[in-house]
Image (cartoon, rainbow, N blue to C red; front, top):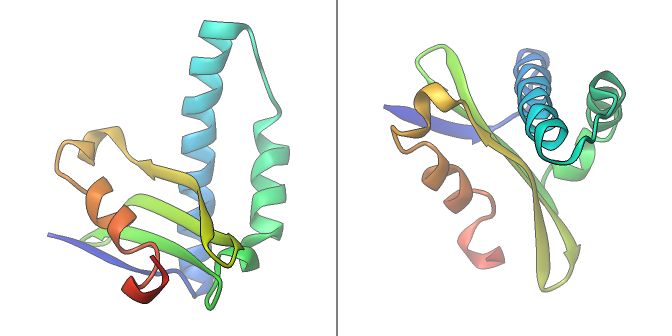
Length: 115
């Protein structure tokens, strides 16, 4: 069963970094193949890790999806206006995507009163 929680600890940050890197490598492969675009993945991961606080409550969420002790997905959301949010870096590992982890991540991104 998948559990989803707000990332808070240093151990969580390591899992976030791992998932950001995997997501960006996946995106870079597809963008390169389709459009010839190639970007500096390490620089993007470092920038994203330096700015994690924008995804913390009360104006954001940084959720990890776990199956046992394995991180299987991530969902980041931040408020950009009082009535609007932005989802970033929503990613579920391909090996678990068919198991349905993406839906719970998106539904848990913000508490009901903020949706």
